[in-house]
Length: 102
Image (cartoon, rainbow, N blue to C red; front, side, top):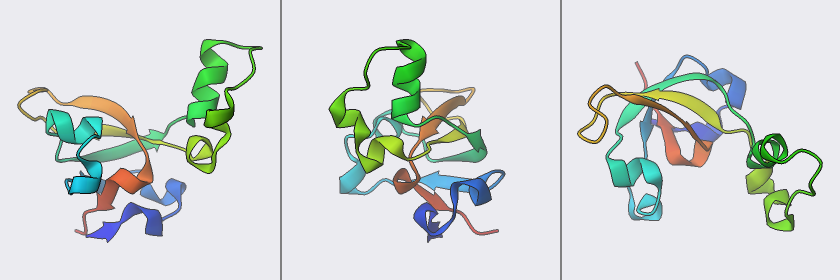
Protein backbone atom coordinates (compact mmCIF):
# COMPACT_ATOMS: atom_id res chain seq x y z
CA UNK A 1 0.00 0.00 0.00
CA UNK A 2 1.17 3.48 -0.83
CA UNK A 3 -0.27 6.82 0.27
CA UNK A 4 -2.47 8.33 -2.42
CA UNK A 5 -0.65 11.64 -1.98
CA UNK A 6 2.32 10.07 -3.80
CA UNK A 7 0.25 10.11 -7.01
CA UNK A 8 -1.13 12.98 -9.07
CA UNK A 9 -4.94 12.96 -8.89
CA UNK A 10 -5.18 11.99 -12.58
CA UNK A 11 -2.97 8.93 -11.97
CA UNK A 12 -5.46 7.54 -9.45
CA UNK A 13 -8.35 7.13 -11.89
CA UNK A 14 -9.10 3.41 -12.20
CA UNK A 15 -6.95 2.41 -9.20
CA UNK A 16 -8.16 0.38 -6.23
CA UNK A 17 -7.87 2.38 -3.03
CA UNK A 18 -8.37 1.70 0.65
CA UNK A 19 -9.79 4.19 3.14
CA UNK A 20 -7.44 5.01 5.99
CA UNK A 21 -8.71 3.81 9.36
CA UNK A 22 -6.18 5.28 11.79
CA UNK A 23 -7.08 7.64 14.63
CA UNK A 24 -6.36 10.69 12.45
CA UNK A 25 -9.37 9.64 10.34
CA UNK A 26 -11.70 8.77 13.23
CA UNK A 27 -13.97 11.72 12.41
CA UNK A 28 -14.08 11.08 8.66
CA UNK A 29 -17.39 9.96 7.19
CA UNK A 30 -15.75 7.00 5.42
CA UNK A 31 -14.56 5.58 8.72
CA UNK A 32 -17.78 6.25 10.62
CA UNK A 33 -19.84 4.28 8.07
CA UNK A 34 -17.25 1.51 7.71
CA UNK A 35 -16.04 1.95 4.13
CA UNK A 36 -12.92 -0.13 3.52
CA UNK A 37 -12.04 0.08 -0.20
CA UNK A 38 -13.23 1.14 -3.61
CA UNK A 39 -12.18 2.24 -7.09
CA UNK A 40 -11.46 5.81 -8.18
CA UNK A 41 -13.76 6.51 -11.12
CA UNK A 42 -13.11 10.20 -11.84
CA UNK A 43 -11.90 13.49 -10.45
CA UNK A 44 -14.41 15.29 -8.31
CA UNK A 45 -14.77 18.96 -7.46
CA UNK A 46 -12.86 21.02 -4.97
CA UNK A 47 -14.92 22.29 -2.04
CA UNK A 48 -14.61 25.81 -3.48
CA UNK A 49 -16.03 24.63 -6.84
CA UNK A 50 -18.90 22.93 -5.05
CA UNK A 51 -19.77 26.16 -3.21
CA UNK A 52 -19.72 28.03 -6.52
CA UNK A 53 -22.16 25.52 -8.05
CA UNK A 54 -24.54 25.70 -5.10
CA UNK A 55 -24.64 29.50 -4.91
CA UNK A 56 -23.22 31.11 -8.09
CA UNK A 57 -22.21 34.71 -7.72
CA UNK A 58 -21.87 34.63 -3.96
CA UNK A 59 -18.39 35.08 -2.56
CA UNK A 60 -16.60 31.91 -1.54
CA UNK A 61 -16.17 31.89 2.26
CA UNK A 62 -12.60 32.67 3.27
CA UNK A 63 -12.20 29.34 5.10
CA UNK A 64 -12.75 27.57 1.76
CA UNK A 65 -9.88 29.42 0.11
CA UNK A 66 -7.29 27.30 1.86
CA UNK A 67 -5.07 24.79 0.06
CA UNK A 68 -7.20 21.95 1.41
CA UNK A 69 -10.40 23.43 -0.06
CA UNK A 70 -8.70 23.89 -3.43
CA UNK A 71 -7.51 20.27 -3.67
CA UNK A 72 -9.39 18.11 -6.14
CA UNK A 73 -11.36 15.37 -4.46
CA UNK A 74 -11.57 11.88 -5.97
CA UNK A 75 -14.90 10.32 -6.90
CA UNK A 76 -14.88 6.74 -5.63
CA UNK A 77 -17.19 3.78 -6.16
CA UNK A 78 -16.92 2.23 -2.72
CA UNK A 79 -17.32 -1.48 -2.08
CA UNK A 80 -20.32 -2.75 -0.08
CA UNK A 81 -20.17 -2.43 3.71
CA UNK A 82 -22.75 -2.97 6.48
CA UNK A 83 -24.04 0.62 6.21
CA UNK A 84 -24.22 0.42 2.39
CA UNK A 85 -24.81 -3.21 1.40
CA UNK A 86 -24.92 -2.26 -2.29
CA UNK A 87 -21.93 0.06 -2.07
CA UNK A 88 -22.02 3.79 -2.69
CA UNK A 89 -20.24 6.57 -4.53
CA UNK A 90 -18.56 9.41 -2.70
CA UNK A 91 -15.89 12.09 -3.02
CA UNK A 92 -12.81 11.92 -0.80
CA UNK A 93 -9.53 13.82 -0.53
CA UNK A 94 -6.31 11.97 -1.33
CA UNK A 95 -5.13 12.14 2.29
CA UNK A 96 -7.95 9.75 3.28
CA UNK A 97 -6.75 7.07 0.84
CA UNK A 98 -4.04 4.52 0.25
CA UNK A 99 -3.43 2.86 -3.12
CA UNK A 100 -3.82 -0.89 -2.97
CA UNK A 101 -1.06 -2.49 -5.01
CA UNK A 102 -2.03 -5.34 -7.34
